[in-house]
Image 1: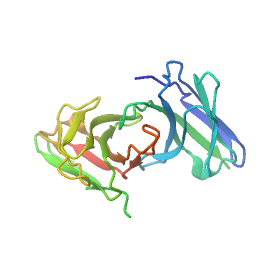
Image 2 (image 1 turned 45 degrees about the vertical axis):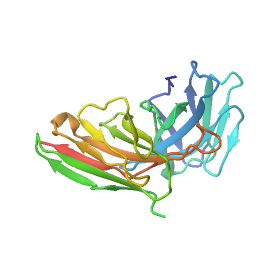
Image 3 (image 1 turned 90 degrees about the vertical axis):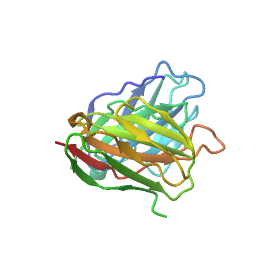
Image 4 (image 1 turned 180 degrees about the vertical axis):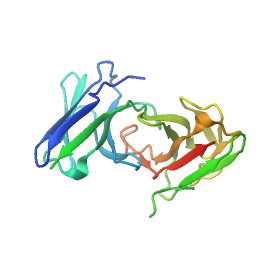
Length: 109
Length: 116
């Protein structure tokens, strides 16, 4: 399975944009790039996913590099409720998701 | 529509005891999975199922059994609990959908298990 690399932690101030990077240099052509987040004491929740093109939804944007070897999750205006662990995951074999340790995002008032 | 429901939420077991963690989903999803999460770690896949009657092993299957007799239910059995199985367990479900592998996975709220 292809692996992802994320920074262990990042910090942001409230109302500021946050860019969470993910490297996936061994990605295959059929791998979708998924982002999930996990709030304290909760199960992971879906944030966004994409294959080749940049994607937007009400929660975030996903920017995918042209060679697909990296991607960036963009939270346009961080709130205190966005403090969580964010996981970048490649999925090519259903229903498996292989989680790394993710990026812990701290948001300061 | 309750989504993915796990029971119990908290459980304390003695070493050697057996128990079953229940998972049910009401979304008619074909795919279901069990993960465990140890402190400070990401989730690790224990077992998964692509449909009723079909199960397979994930990354860390030892000490656990599963079965899938219905689409809705996917119980996880601990055969003889060990302290190393102290963890938080998450059940998940999804549908393959027309796009194949790009679909959302829904997680339950977790079951906190302590083995003493």
